[in-house]
Amino acid sequence: MRLMRANILAITALIAFGPVAMAADSKKTAAMVEDYEHVPLPPGFQVIHSELEGPVFADAAGHTLYNWPSKGLRNGDAGEQKGKPGCDNVKQTETSGLMSPYPPGLILPEVETRPTCTQVWPPVLASADAKPVGKWTVVTRNDGSKQWAFDGYPLYTSILDTMPGQTNGGTHRRTRGDAPAYRKPVSPPPNLPPQFRVERQMTGRLLTTGGFSVYASDKDGPNKSNCDAACLRQWKPVLAPAYAKAQGELSIFERSPGVNQWAFRKKPLYTHLDEEKPASFEGSDEPGWHNVFTTMAPKAPADFIVQASRGGEVLADKKGNTVYIYMCGDDAIDQLSCDHPDTPQAYRFAMCGGGDPKRCLETFPYVIADKNAKSGSMAWSVVAIEPLTGKKAAPDSTTALHVWAFRDRPVYTFARDKFPGDIGADGWGEFNAWRNGYKAFWLRDDFRNNAG
Image 1: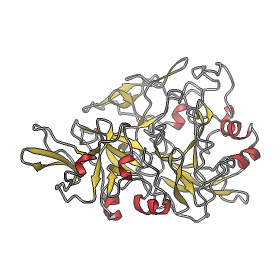
Image 2: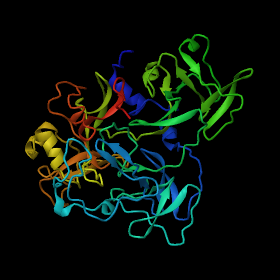
Image 3: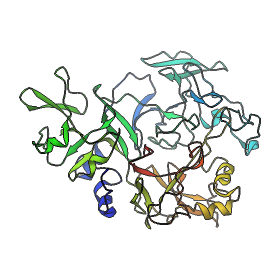
Image 4: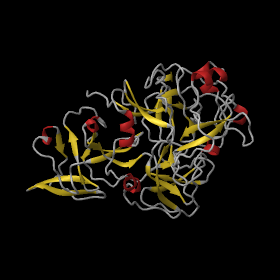
């Protein structure tokens, strides 16, 4: 394993919170929009480019569409099977017992005001005469109404998405076996040859081949490789089979007589010969070499930096304190999330302070923001929080804290971290925090593969 890059400020300027995807011209890079397969769409639907999830399907108002695929939990399955809507207008009041060690029948927090599944996830209803188009089909709900589905899975919007292109409702971010059955944005397929795929990372949508990262070199020209014999001892050109054809943003050029190489946005592609871990960033440690992204995640606000840690690179506040995100899903049959300020805070208070909000504030303090700070993206925002309730504050509140939020969810530091880049609270919670707890905001994780 190569040593971590030491000059963090230089890294910040260079990678803009992720290895440089392509051009040095940041404006040009930001303007690049990921291509996708233009599949048939029923009337009233569209594709919108989101900041974090790339192209996503949306309704006529621009609201991102989500599905809820079935997931095996410890004591049964949650989510929906193809063609069978399960999110309904029945208020759940008790735990389901699906997520061991919780028994069924426990009363849920804030049960009096707990919303139903469809109040949080409005179904995308179809008219009585709606016709299937391609993978778009119409399924019948339990109440007899019709609902749109894609690839068999019923479709919903999220009440957390208030602007076109937002994906606050759900994400394709990697989770582990004990995580709840989360909702996920629905997207058209990437317009890529079969040799390639896209991996979702916190820094963006990473282009890979066979699961392994591909890289571009500053020394190459448009559709021209300058990787010589010495270069080839570390880098392997991504060759195109004789039958391959250019597709989307991937082109083919003749590297040498009879030998064709792939290029993305005209930059020749390579894999790093020393890498054994899929979706790695190790090759970007080599000067002049960069991971390739189809979509870069938006740059974090100026109140944050990139900080080296013992496990990789994390997002940190200006003092170098690791930033953490909170993850939570409850054990009701509808698996509503509990990681947003509009949801019950009892789970978080139990995890960070033994049920004591004041202790929570001391152990996991919010990352404070200037009230009028602007982020420059939809992914990052400033929200007003009542510190003793954890809920969003009223506009006229005199006690509110103004804090930074990612995907409309506050971010935190950990009071017990002892030095810049310490990650003492990574995995703080139930089942390594995949179910309920805190995760470091990983930008690059060289060991545990949490960065996705």
